[in-house]
Image 1 (cartoon, rainbow, N blue to C red):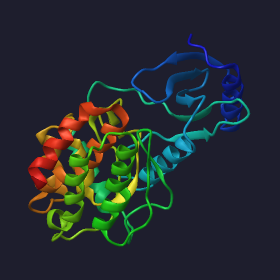
Image 2 (image 1 turned 180 degrees about the horizontal axis):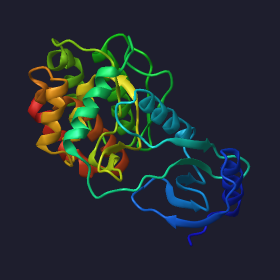
Image 3 (image 1 turned 30 degrees about the horizontal axis):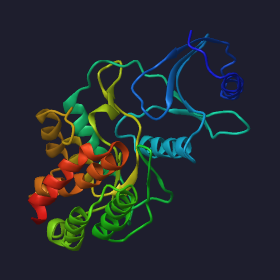
Image 4 (image 1 turned 180 degrees about the vertical axis):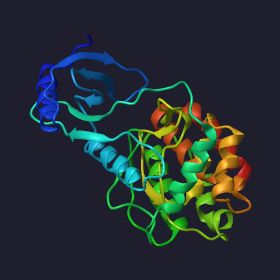
Length: 297
C-alpha cells in the first residue's frame, strides 16, 4: 500500500466523511502519468476515488481544475470525472482534488468522441470569449480576460503571454521574436473571415487527456477550459496524435467546420508549441521556427 503524508491522510479521512463515506481507507495505489502532481487510487470499504495532490501546489490549481470539470459536466455532452471535493494547501496539508474513480480501458470510441465533442461545442452558451477566472495550461498560467473579439483574445490572452514568458526564459532570440511579431500583426489575415461563436473548450485536448471508461466511451480529464473558437480545440488534437479519421469524420458530420480550417489549425497550435517551449525547453524551438517560416517567411 502506497503511503500518503500523515497530514494528507487526516485531511482525506475528514473529507471522505464530509461527503458521506465513513471509510476506512483500505488501500492507496500510486498512479502514473502526471508530471506536475502526485496521483493515487483511493480504495475505501464503500467506494474508490482518484486523488491528485501536491505539497507545493500552484495557487488555485486544483480549484480551477474542479471548476473546469464542473463547467464541462453541466453541458451533459461528454463525460468528465465527477468532482467529489477539492482543498487548497493549508497549514502543512498538501492541496488535493478527489475525483470519481473511472475504470479505464486501453482506448475510447473515436466516433462517439467526435460526436460528443461536437455536441459540447454546439451546446455552449456565451456572448464573449474568455472565462470569469484564470487557470492553467499544464503548469503555465492561462489568462482568460473576457474579449468580444476572438482574434484579439487569441493574440492578447494566448500568444502574447507565452511570447513574453519565452522572452523572460531566454527562449525568444531576436530573429524568432521578429517573426512572432510579424505573425501577430497579421493574425487577421490568417483567422478572419469566418463566422464564430464562443464555445466551451476543453483547452488542453491532446490524446492523453481523453480516456476510455468501462464501456469504452470517452472521458475528458485535466481541462484548461475557456470559451473560445472550437477550432482551437480541434487543432491541438492533431499535434500529438491519438485521434483517428473516424473521430474527425464524426465531428464534421455533427458540426461541420468552415473551409480552410487546416490552415488556421497551424496558427492555433503555435500557442501550444510556445507553451511546450516554455515548459520543456529548446527542443520545441525547431518546431516553432518551422511553423513561423511557413507562415511569415
